[in-house]
Each structure stands twice: as C-alpha cells, then as structure tokens.
Image (cartoon, rainbow, N blue to C red; front, side, top):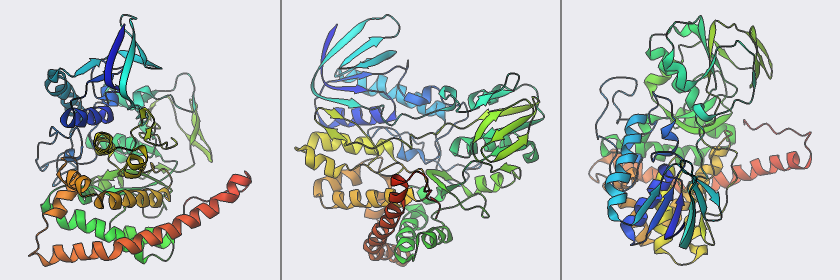
Length: 482
C-alpha cells in the first residue's frame, strides 16, 4: 500500500511525540507516525514497574499538554520537591495525547506495531501488510536516541546455569526472601533498584552493590521549575558558572562544583569517573549511603554459582542470592553525533543538556520557521551526551553556545521562554527585581558566563590534547578522571 504525507516520523516515544506536537501546533502539515510498540511512549512501554521520572514532571511530555500535577510531594524520598510522574502515568499521558490531541486533528496517521524497514517502507508486525510512504517534506528518525531498558537489555557477561538472575522488571515478582540481593550497575537504574529495596525494608547489609564507576549526580532541588525555588535553581546556575570561571584546573573545577552543590556524589571518599546527568534528592543520598557493601572491582565478566568474576577480582555469591541486572545504559552514551538537519532527514538529538523532549520541540520549531539547513544546524547544534566525568565540560560548553545563539534571535528567544517545557526561562524573565538576593544571583550569572566559557574552552583543549596520543598509540592510556 502506498501512503503520502508531509512528515514521516519513525518512533512514537517521547522525542517523536514532542516533535509531532510542535508540527501540529505550528503548521498544517500531515504526519505519519510509525512505531513497533502497541501504544505511544517508546521505552515507557517496557520500563520497570516502579520507575519514575527523575526530574520534575514539568520538564517532560509535549509542549501543548501538561504532565505534572503541579504539586509538591509530601511523603517519600522526594518530599518537598515537585512531583515525579510514575512510569504508568507517563504511559497513560502519551496514550491520551495520541488519542485526544493528535488523532482528532485528522492530520496524523498512527501505525503502531509496525517495523520501519528503511527507504520509506514499513511492515505491520501483526498482519504482514507492507507500506511505502511518499514523503513530501522530511523523514524524522526519532529512534536515534534509543533508550536502553533492563527488560530488553542483553548483559555483556555470562551467567552460569542455576544462578538466580533477573531483570530489574522482575524484582517486584519475588515471593520468598533470598539470602541477599546483588545489584549490578552503578547508574540511575542501579540507584533505583537500591532505593526500591531500601524503601521496601530490605536491610542495607543484605544488599551488595556492584559499581564499576561512581558517578557525579545532580541535586534534584536545583532542578525545580518555579520562582519559589529561585535561589536553588537559578542560584545553582550562577554557582556553576562561578565555579567554572574561577577554577584553576579541571580537578579544582570539580571540587568547586561539589562545594557549591552543583554536583554531588554518593561516596565522598571515591572520585567519580562518570557523569550521565542523573538527579537525586538529599533524602535519597542519605538512604544510599546506608549500603556499605559496595564493590568497586570493575565490570562484571561472569556470574558463577559460587562467585562473581569482575575485571579486577572476584567476590563470593551463591544461588541463594538474587542478582539484579541494572547494567543497561539508559542513554546511548557511545552514540556518535550527526547533523540534525541533513537533506530530507531530521535526526533529533539533544540541543539542551538533560532535556531530550524540549530539544525535540526546539528542533521542530526551527524546522518550520527557518529556511536554510546551515541556519537550522547552527541553532540546533548537538549537545553531546556525557559519559565520562570530563564530558561534563563539553556538554556545558555546547549548551551555553546554543543558549547564546538562541538569545541573539528575538523570535526564537521569545518562543523558548514561552514554551511549557522551558521552566527556567520563565523564572528568569519574571525575576523579582525588588528582591536583593535574586538580583545578586542574576548579576553573578551575568558576570561569570563569559569567563566560564573561556575557561571551559581552555580545559577542553587540555582534554583533547591528552587524548590525541591515545588515538595514535593504543598502548597509551589516558586517565579520564582528572
């Protein structure tokens, strides 16, 4: 069957939905959305049952429809901060957006349970029906930032027969208490597993946590989106610029960022080597620090019936322990960036750190309001996804450059500030000019922005220079943690 549309969007996850939403709002274009899942929402269809957003819900979803309930949590480890939508709430939200907003326009055709084959062709996984699409404008590959989740992840280590090994999704199915729990993975998924066990009264001494790399984390209080949190959110951005501007070295910079609360770590005795942008509350930090049996012997190589073999040693185990796989990387940190606008293909990627859905909305707006590919790519330069600790610098520099370019375009600056997903812009625009503390924060922000960018470029040049010998000589090892 041959179909025709203006935009063919592959993927109805958060990125694809956010992109389509702006197209529908700002144009009269027709859209075909193709996805392998039965419902929109992408990886949320297979996420673990107790997953929540780890940033406030105000920053998530599509531009035209609020996800957050606008409430401050009164109980739990997020107490005192804005609500974090559960996985079930996010899935229901995207389903509602599709059914109640997209499809009633008559301009969206949605093909769930279909596999995109490339070359503008897709096939129904249910009937085998084959479709070819005539695309009048652009193909949008909204699957490039594909999120890896435990239930669909294949571990890169071997597991002996008889070992009690499970995906994080199956943790809720346990009916008899094991001798103990072994959580494999030090990222956000591993953190979620440990917190869920602790919240369900598991003794922290019964938890073994295998952490191949410790991570720098963000204090969630600094990501709150209303004026009531001005000093912690906008103040945090001012502190960030000041720390970078005043740093005398990369090590000194991270020390300053930690001193100012911009970055936090679970164990202050261990220098983090990783940064993936995960947020955490102070109450969650307190809980995680109760776990004393943290194993730092590198990545798991094999799980045997009586031992776990790691890159730097072994630890004992048994079939009486539950081994929980949290080794999937939620974000594709090894993915190479590519131009977002390239001929008749758009590949959404992050143009602002930590915010893939806001990024998708910006990219869609730029697509329909600007003419040349060069101009579009300048306004939508890719902010690389961080992996190592020092990647934080390149991420911040790229984001600052985008923010500067947006600020120089009056129309785009206005659109960003009015977009629902840009919580901080509204706070800055509506700053209380009669509040001396708030005005001092704004002054600190302005005073340190340019010096911070200059220092970032200096440090990035140092990192690049150190990495060049490693590219020429594989025997030369560069220590990423500074």
